[in-house]
Amino acid sequence: MSDNTNNNDYENTCYMCRRSENVAGPMVTLPGNITICTDCMQKSLDTINASGIDFSNMGFNNNFGFVPPKSGEQKVSDKDGENTAIESTNNENGEEGQDKPQTPPGGISFINLADFANPFGNRQKVKRKKRNPDEPLIDIKKIPAPHKIKEQLDEYVVGQDYAKKVMSVAVYNHYKRVATNTLDEIEIEKSNILMIGPTGSGKTYLVRTLAKILDVPLAIADATSLTEAGYIGDDVESVISKLLAAADNDVDKAEMGIVFIDEIDKLAKKRDTNSRDVNGESVQQGMLKLLEGSEVEVPVGASSKNAMVPLTNINTRNILFICGGAFPDLEDIIKERLNKNTAIGFQADLKDKYDNEENLISKVNTEDLRKFGMIPEFLGRLPIVCTFEKLTKEMLVEVLKEPKNAILKQYQKLLELDEVELIFDDSALEAIAEKAAEKNTGARALRAIIEEFMLDIMYEIPKDDNIGRVTITRDYIEKTGGPIIEMRTSETPLIEASTKAPAQAAGNAN
Image 1 (cartoon, rainbow, N blue to C red):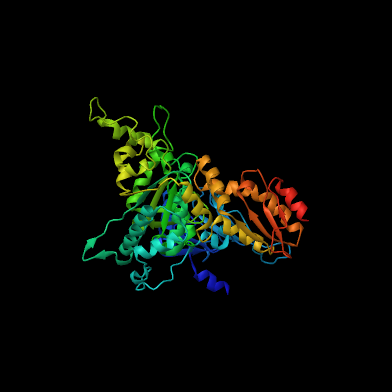
Image 2 (cartoon, one colour):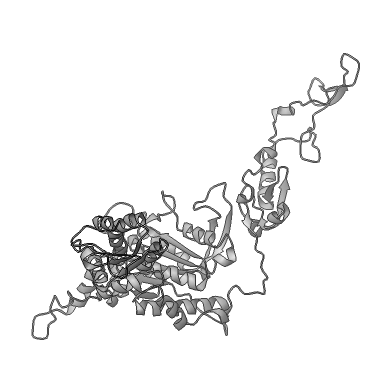
């Protein structure tokens, strides 16, 4: 592809204010391929005129450069210094002098703008929109129905049926709204989502899968890094910058994407503190305009605004915001609200009535979240509240083997490349799930447990090419025995190491 074609794919940006051609209008091209918008050019001319410098005695060529007199001419002034004449002089050979640089009058020096030519190429340009205005970005007929979205989510995410149903309906309605814009002159409001659930219950994974199914840009941001404008950290606009980068700097595509802000519970108001809350309530206030929908100016290709980064405007009206958090100790607030009816008498509720409630988080309401530290204005812009269940032992077993990219399937594929079959018996899966449940970190504990006991197997198996099958047992998980290793030449187990260490079992097989 030629350079001209590449340049046509991008819009020029003003060297002074960093706005793109789409925002600032036509540009003025100066020497060195420097482009300046008409507003900045007019401001520069007004500044020069207000400085009081007299340019009438200077010569300028067509390229706005100073033209010094020839070396054979010199300026002669009268005694009052008012009238100036050009007097011709000759050199020693009597020939007319040649042009040579001289200092401009009045001690004024000029800057060569070519020295400021952009060394970064297309980094200082915004990608040009090349799209048919009559062609919609989203075809309403191609949006999958909610039940089809849930079916595809079931292939990757175990359990959480209520959460998947809520997400499927919310996303379907949102993109119908984006595709139609208006329906019978009735404007459909945007419905952002708040996901609440314990760590490791699948909140982030569900959003990733959803974006993959819909094939839309997705930006995942961490709320813990966000701070109030003017402080060290990321501004709230940096979330939109990540979405723009995920859309390959295509503004139209970014304006219909999904933004997932994780750890949103870390923005709760700090209790009993006199210090300035620069990453709590103030960040919630700053995010209000993003959630509701407004024009924001964001940098292109960077997370912060500076003089070397072009800026572009993005409308967040059609961007779906999904906020998620674990909200620790929220169950205590819910329990306190539910126990308000506790009194003395035969019909009184017991204080420990909800102590053994497994899915107490599903009874959350706006009052509980406000008491947790979320401001009412912020909660009002997240009308859909979706709760996740804590993973039980049975659900953890399904997470191990049911999804398309389950952890066990990944290790089976790794050993399959070595032509070794890996088998997990049911008792081993139950032992792994029990250990993960004890850690109380959800599905995140599964990989840590499997990585631990698969280390010796992945190290020892490639030593012997005759090993054909490895069976993981409960004894091996509980470290009271070893795996069952079978050779390729025999259908019966060659070694059944019930009391030997895994490394020894593999060594005996050699």
